[in-house]
Length: 334
Image (cartoon, rainbow, N blue to C red; front, side, top):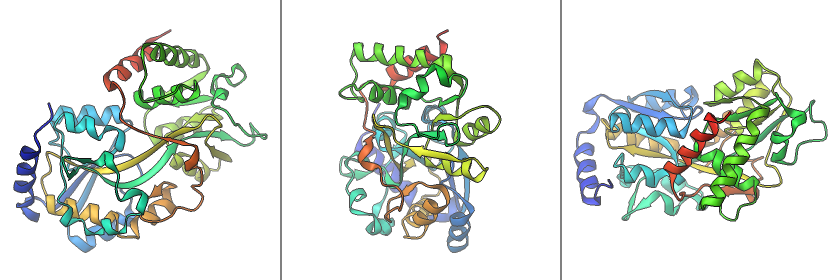
């Protein structure tokens, strides 16, 4: 059930009043690449706040763990704009005190007024990274390039394909590939078509993977040459391991995401948490993240990330639980 705005503000006010005396720690629950030593260590040195991080392999796992602990295990979660409302509906996040995040003045114009992070006049998500879920292919295996997602359904590529294990993103991407009018608002016929499309792909897969590193490790230990990826970082990491790969957005388009820091209802040290979010927008952390991991950041134009016009930006969906059900049925299908 959605907590009332007043209830959330009351909790937040009480938590903010505790200041740094409750542990001097920021407990992050995020995707890989958001808590690297290059910006964690300066933050800890400047503030005296320690950072601990737990990484997730998928949005489904993150939500399940937040529900399981009722938010008590983490202070901040990295969630994209399409699922902020789901966290709100389940009472898992509370609003920020934006007076404690003055570096929002550094946000690029396109990220300074994102409606999906707002509810009832309060801010529930602070934009900090963006990117896409593109196609990675091996340049030697495909010297002429790959311009369509249909390569992941081509029998000639059987046993060389990897795909991420993620309900919403697989359903959305399949809807984009099928050319459905609105990939975030599917009807019964659309769901049937998406489900069949995803089941058809299974015969060509090496496996599904959960998490950036797992996907790269499976590529490294298999005959993979095509991947429905979790983002630019996987191409960067594969290149670091010596693979000549290309990251692309095929002609059908691809999913674009905007990740935010969201404040868990279980936050313990609100002072340190707000300092962390402010640190992310200081004009140095974002570009460092882009250089190191390949994500776009929200305070600095990102060279090389020139395909935003091909992206379909994630939005709230018609029925998230149904998407999870459809995905589970796909994985269970023979």
